[in-house]
Length: 46
Image 1 (cartoon, helix red, strand yellow):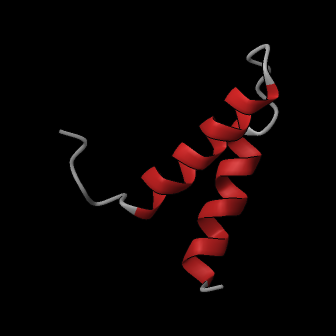
Image 2 (cartoon, one colour; image 1 turned 90 degrees about the vertical axis):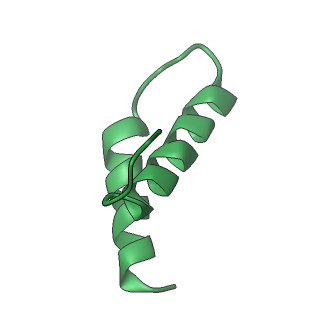
């Protein structure tokens, strides 16, 4: 695993992993989305 991917995974898990959305699948999806967004940090969302 490259270090940027590892860093984004760790960051996303630390920031979003403890959020309780009422369904563990939603939290898992939020962590996944955070990873994807952090890997494109210089890009526009639109």
